[in-house]
Length: 442
Image (cartoon, rainbow, N blue to C red; front, side, top):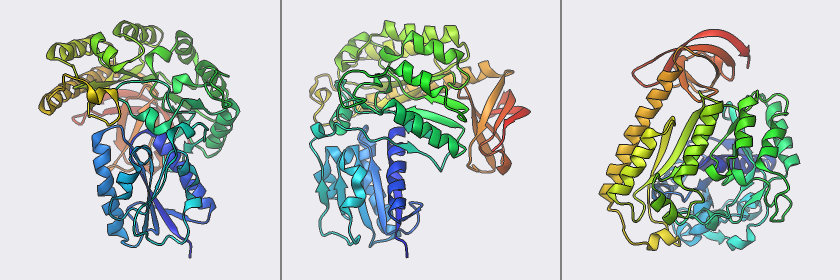
């Protein structure tokens, strides 16, 4: 009988794209992929190390796998596995830990799937993570995550990603277009571009440090791929989001008016401590430019609270900065100390209770921002792509500008595009609508 393998992914869209590619490798080796909740012969956990909670969740997930099958072989891959391989290998039940480059060759490291007495570690020096492996996630969603770039050359003082993923490097433009075409052939309607620092696309495209192509050239090329109805740019640094790209997206039939732009702090003092590559004035300029050419664009913001040295005055500066900014929602992160980062050694540590209070305040502001954005869209006609999951009798979907809508469950709507008129916001904060017409069937 075929061996069964199951996967669990922590963290970002990039991790999901890599898990999906690694899973296809297992299937090519004759494995059957099953859900993580099912009994499998092998469980692969793709880890994250951005937050403290992701570290803690790892042990819980290992226990979940052991509960399904105590004899199963358990492997850990991903960012946490690169940063703390020995720590993961010491977790009861873990048999194999692979680093940043080894994870893509995972089937080379397994034999008969017999349990090991101790976790076996194969982890490179991060300087050796200097080659690119393309990835995309497909098959379990109506959208695909397409990896175009990996690694980061920035030196933000709070971040472990350069230590976990290595230098900035890019897929070749030809391979990105090939992967996009493969996704299109599967009937997927939307592609989300993902990477660690996608605005840096083109650096390291052929193994050298110079840019062979720019991010704008990537966007222009993807806009010509047949069969993809939506292209969405995931998180992009404000200093790398150029006017030319914003103008192109505003005129594109494929790229949607949705941007996610990390801010991290509205205080220039804190941005300097973080070693971000911009100050608040540039961020304001980016938002104004987007809204000038795309008034209905959705703009999401990453922000960190409780960074060392963040006083009450600094936090209120951030709060008022965001309150006055024409953005649509916030992703709020509570700062957590990460080993081997400069921030972990900084003075002015913010008490965890204060961090929590500040996080709660910004989450409240985010809810207010999202509600205001949704209200601004009522009465407009939008295009909705419906998702594939039945959530308590309802089907959900997103407009091109990322308004989340809901309707009674109807399997015929899955992976279809409809023109709708947004009519009201219900008590759950989701938007109801009237159908106008079907645009693209499943």
